[in-house]
Image (cartoon, rainbow, N blue to C red; front, side, top):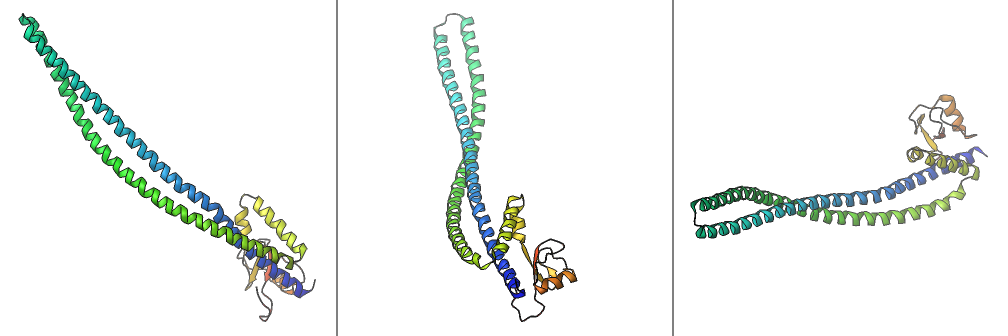
Length: 257
């Protein structure tokens, strides 16, 4: 392969890498969007569960109110019964016993009314909190619906963009020598299979060498390595990050990158 042919191949490999970097960014967004939608749905579900719990508290207080009101009604009926009996008893002892029963009911009523008053205060507070939570849920659902619709539209746009870029990539591939292309694809496959593959793949298979510095590791390229790379006679790799180097030509009249 001539010097110019190798330089062109390096340029094409770099262009392919740029295309794949854009595709990786799109792929990541396509993965992130469903997670974002799930987070929106989870936020609404959490608020709905909080509202349901508050509604259950209100229901429990209302149950307690009904029980105390029923107790007061039963006490009133029993009190009336004792008073009727007082009218028919013939001894002071029996009358006094019934009076003590009535006094006992009065004490129970006083306790029940205190509890009922506290329950009413709790009910008013909980109802206000429930109303606030219901309004919050409504707002969150509206916002989640709007955001979800925007995310789904973005998803469709990204999918269309990805398909177009994949189509263009397929048409671009034959320009690259098969040996170089296969080497690049093997490297990409290996990176994507690793735990930090996407990050490593974005860092690139091929690094530009500008002003004597590797664009991947930001380290200075050793003078002898730079000299060899500028000849474009063979593939030269950065001694620091091991990336394939595509360096600036020794003269500015040659296109770069």
